[in-house]
Each structure stands twice: as C-alpha cells, then as structure tokens.
Length: 310
Image 1 (cartoon, rainbow, N blue to C red):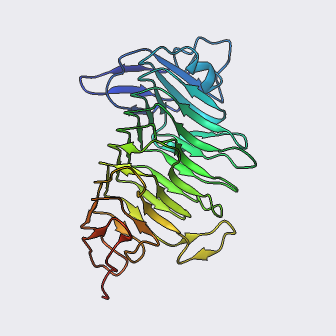
Image 2: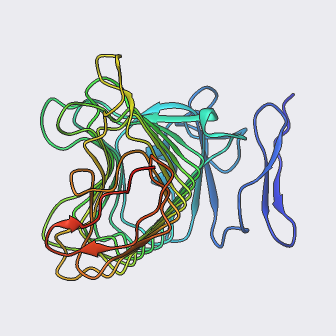
C-alpha cells in the first residue's frame, strides 16, 4: 500500500510524492493544500492528499480559497483560470518533468487574474495557434506573481510561453527555461501587448534557447539580469540557424523606461536590431558574443554603440 506524507519543518513545506521521494517545495503554505494526479486521481476523491487526489488541475483549483496551494503530478491538457489571490500551482516532482501541462490549440493553460500567485516546478508545453492568442501562462491583473523553476518547451505552432496585457507589475520570473518558441513571426518567450506598461518586473536567472524572440515587453523600472540569451538555435523546421533570434530583449515603448539590464550573456552584437532599450535605461556589464561589454543606451535609436571588435 502506498503511503503519502506531507508536513513542514521550521523553514520548508515538505512533500512525499508518488514514488517515495521527499521534496521541499518552499515555505509552509498559509492555506490548504489540494492535489491533482492525472494517473491515479479521481473526480470522486476529496483532493486532500496524493492518495485522494483529484484527476484534473481544474478540479483541485475549484476547491481553493485565496492563499491555497494546488500540487500537481502527471500530464494534463487543460485551461485553468485563477481569480483568487495568493494561490500557488506547484509541480510535485523533483524536477518539472514530473508535472507536464499543455492546452488545446488556441488555449491558455493557466490564466491568472489575481495578485500574489505562484507557479513553480512545472513543465509547460505552450498551446499551438490556429486562432486567438494561445499561451502557457496569461497574466492580467496579476501583480506580484512569481513564476519559478519551470520549463516552457514549445511545440509545433506554439506562440507564447508567458503573455500579458502589461497588467502584471512587480512580477518575478526566476530560474526558468524557455525553449523552442520558434514559430515564425510570433514565437516569443515573454510577450507583453496592450496599453499598460509593466513596472517593477524582475527577470533573473533564466535560460532562453531557440526562441524567435526572447523578451518583448514595454517596461519601466524593471530588472533583467543574469540570463542566458543566445542568438542561434533550432528553427521551427528543425534546422539550425546561427541568427535565429530576431529580438533578444526589446523593452522600449513604455511611457518611461529607466530599466536595468545587466550581467546577461547576449548571443549577438549589441545593436537595436536585436536589443532595444527604453528611455533612461542602464545597460551595462552584459557579455556579448565577442566577449566585450558595452554600457550606453540611446532612447531614440535603441542601443547606440555596436560592440567593438574583439
């Protein structure tokens, strides 16, 4: 008989997952914890443990109040909306591959329209496009969201990994992988569109690979630091291109800028075609393709200095 356990020590909430491994999934949750297991769950269960897990994420989320947590295990094809503040969606495995979440074409896997939510340790396969605006995570009215230690792995015709109308101030996007968002024209890891400018976002410690566009989002007073953003990678056709990435970082267009972009590994020369700053930005300490640094940004034309020859 399988035994599942959960509890917390002084610092971390601890979880024994199916298979017997104990993991620490962060600070002890303030609310209740509900479970979704695609392999062993049932809609008839109460969702209060792995042994009585719900069959879908939506079923577990429907039990939540503000501040609760949904633990997930297995593989899901769902579109879930969260309008409750402080709800967390956390993959229950030791790495994101134990919790895989995709959506039908044109869907949004997870739509967050409340503040202070968390998404952690999940492998998303962003939905394909035929109409609408498909995305793995959609943020609107989602300030202070944290998206951490997830893997966003595009598939044929995937458009966006994280998409927002800009209404997601003070969001933190930390230590994720964004791979194969390479659909022609639209493939983008982090995309903001709409009338609102993002304020106070932190994008830190992420790996971007084989994306047509890495970050395209008008921002102000935000931080982009310690990321790897190579310019080459696999195109949608499966062929390798040394200049796949069209836009590495484009944060221009906000009413004001004053962003800090530093300590990033950039995959091509520093110029506006691939890196476009905002008014008053500070871009410095970034390592370019030729292992040189540049420091200056011009508000009108983007980055004003080409990286000097090695």
